[in-house]
Image (tube, rainbow, N blue to C red; front, side, top):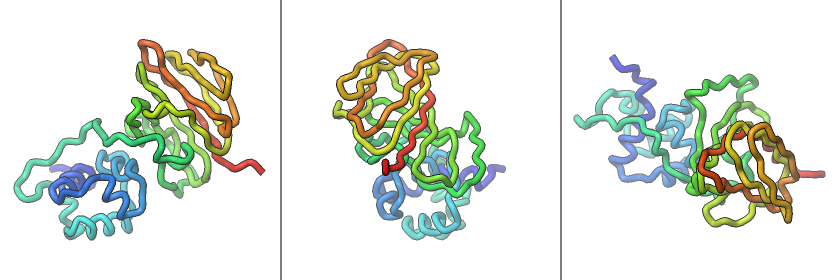
Length: 217
């Protein structure tokens, strides 16, 4: 028998699509990020009880319907990797990418990370989710030809970024400085300087990134 909790994500997605609501509209009405709703639907995050009741109310179904293995005789929608893509412009800083967590200890399974996929071909995978605000610890993946945002504009935000290249190469532009970050190389810089990352190679770039979004005082 299918675990109803494990089935919750695909059920939510099935009902949302049946009701005609977009992922972005659900996120807007719940006042959360689209990536958070996507993570719930893909089984990579469990909603709180309050969020669960808010979802049921928004979708006009009883809470227990969300845990049923079938709905209206239709087949369940499979959990897929084609999560809705988002724009980098949605976030003032990378530290805004995920909703706040209350955890004091966070251990993340490599097969169950929270993932954000950008429309520019970039993927962010969260490596820890603690209660500390204004920080982001993640693995970044730049597919060949991808760049920081689809508009090609330089990024500016508060705080500092620190990165370590695991594999592949990425071109890093910071102000007037252009350099290549390759395996084993690391970098740190003031994020208020206009910056841009671009993979001009033929292989994906993987890097470990830490972003401290705190304002300078």
